[in-house]
Structure formats: structure tokens, C-alpha cells
Image (cartoon, rainbow, N blue to C red; front, side):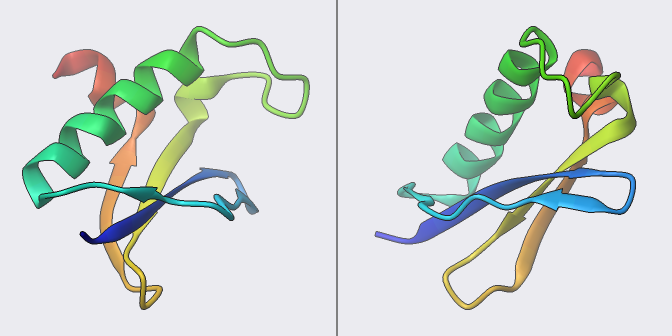
Length: 77
């Protein structure tokens, strides 16, 4: 099963997902990315004053970016 890493980019900072998640398909990975972004938007975090300025960067096991999801897009989907 493929492993994906869902990291948060805020301005010049990358909050890197070190563990990753085993996700069976690309479609399920996109659904998980949307869910993650929506959950984070609801979570207070001092290092990020406005989640809507962030994006979720999903990489595969080789480190290749497979999805970049701006947080505002997660609210529209």
C-alpha cells in the first residue's frame, strides 16, 4: 500500500509529516487531504495565525509531490 506524507506549508515554513499514512488509492489520498485540511482549520495553533494562508503538500514515498491543496480550496470542495 502506498505511503503518503501530508505536510503543511505556511509562508516559508514547512511543517513536515514525518510519519506518513498508508492510503490505498489516489482518490482516498485526496479525500484524506481534504479531511485533514478541514480538521486543521478548526484547530488553534500559535505558529499559524490564519490557516487559510496554508496549503497541504502531499508527497509519496519517494518525496515527489503528488498534491498541493490550498486550505481555502478544502472549504469550497
